[in-house]
Image (cartoon, rainbow, N blue to C red; front, side, top):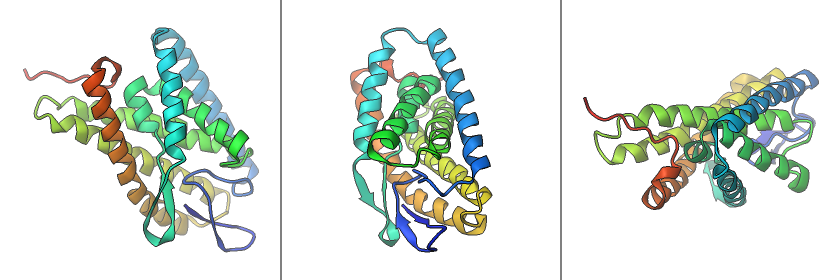
Length: 232
């Protein structure tokens, strides 16, 4: 998506929510590494305690799928483009903790190999796309899916809403990081990020619904966030 270049005051094209080097101040970048490090460390601890060995191959497959899906861009209003984040989908299929690990590997490879996002901003990018997106996606989906007994379409609405909100909350987190760094005022960054990612979130939601529908039809046992509550 388009971000404001602090040195030229011109817009440049950058992948959605991948913050490049030079956009974050030292304290904000350091806080990103600290928050992401604590969250991923906790996720590793929880994953080791709660998930069996059968989920390890699924984590790899999910990371590879999201990595490939992020390579496909779709047009957004204003001449910008966006791509799937994948945090909600990973959380729905893996649970929040394993999803955070899978998403961290995706964001890390993108930064180290493909220069999508700066190394100094890697902590913030991991926090936005691996921590915030996964936790929000899982929490929203788990809350909605409790009403899936009302109608079959509820579980698909749950997946779409979880994906859309996960993208929006990650975009909001990115906006505050840019504002705190002095890169762009919050009154500019927040509306721009939220507006563009509202459209990106629609694409994210549709892809997530399609993937969840396919997995639910073929391997419903893999949808760990599907915990419907029966009536009565």
